[in-house]
Length: 476
Image 1 (cartoon, rainbow, N blue to C red):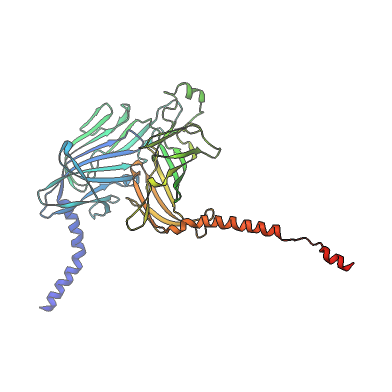
Image 2 (image 1 turned 180 degrees about the vertical axis):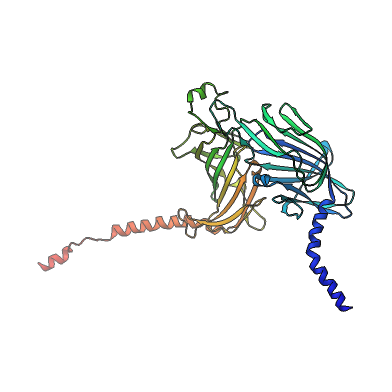
C-alpha cells in the first residue's frame, strides 16, 4: 500500500508541469470577448490605437487577468501600452489603471508577444467587464514612394489586421482607421469594408476564433513631418544655491520620404503651400513654467530663429532650424535653459531630498530613438535613487567640476523608443548634509586668504643677493 501511494505521488510530481501548462491554456479559453472596437489614428507620424474590450468569464473558475496579444511586427514598434478598467456610462465613466506586464502562453503562435492585465478584483463566472487599452507604435508608417521631389506630396503605407489579434474568441468586432486626409490611394478590401471621408471601417466581424489574423494595407497621403530624434542627451544639474541648469543635445532627422533632386529656395518661399509641404519647418517645445536664460545654438553658433512665450502655467519655445528639413536631412543643435530650484526640488518628512522633473522629449509629436538623461546632484549627495513610472536602464557616474574634491554623483537614465506620452514626472531621491554647502565658499575664502598671505610674505621678504651695507663698511 505504501509503495503504490509513493508511485502515485511520483507520477503527480512528474505530470505537475504539464498540468500547469494545460491550466494556463485552458484558463485563457474561459474568457470571451463579446465586443471589441478598435480606433486607429494615423493622422501623424505616430500610430495610436484605442481599443475597447467587453470581456466575459464563461468558465467555472474566476479569472484574475486578461491577456493582450501582439504580432512580431507590432512588438518591434510598440512604445506604450496602457490599460484601464471602466466603470459607469457616458459622462459618469471612471477609469482605473491596471498593471501591464509581459507574459507567455504555450498555445500562442510563434513570435506572438503577450501582455497580462492584472484585474483589481477576480472576474467570476457570468460576470463581464469593460477595458480601455491604449497602444502606441513608432516607425509603423513606411513612405511609398521612398523618394519624392520638392513639389510632391508624401504618401505612406500602413499594415495591420482587420481583426484583433487576441488569445480569446471574439463574438463581435469593428476596426476604424482614421487618416489625415481623404486622399486614400488604395486599401485592402475585406467584406465588409466602408470608406467615408477620412475614415475606413472594417467589420462588423462575428464569431472569430482565438489568434485570428486578417492582413490589410492602407496607402494614403500624410504630409505630417516625420520628426525623429535619433539621440537626445539631457543633462540636468542641480545646485542648492537656487537653480537647475538643463542642457539638451539633439540629433534630429526627417524620417519621411527622402528628398530627390535639387532644393530651390525660391520655389520654397514663393509657394509655401505647394513646395515642401511635408518638410519640417519648425518645432514646438513645451518647457516648464518660469524658464529663463534660454539659448538655442548649433556647431556654428547661436540661432536667432526662435520664439519663447509663456506664463505662470507653461512655457513654449518655438524653434526654426537654419534650413528646412526634407526627408533624410539631419540637424544637430543644443537647447539650454535655467529653472528656479524651489519649483523642482523638495524635501520629505524623513529629511531626504528629491528632484521632480519631466521625462521624455519636450517637442510635440516627436519620436526619440535613444534618450539619455543625466542628473548631476550636488557634491556630498548620498544614496541617489531614481523612480521612473516605466522600465528604464539605470546607472551611476561621478562628475567633477570647479572646486570639486570628491566629485558629484550622477544618476544616468537610458530609454529607447520614446513618444510624447512618456512626458510624465519622475523623481530622484538622495540624502544631503547641509554642511557640504559651505565646502566651496570655505575653499574660496581659504584660497583668497592664502593668496593675500603669500602677497604679504612676498612684499616683506628681501630676496636680493647684494651684501648688507653694515657688513661692507666693516670690511673697509
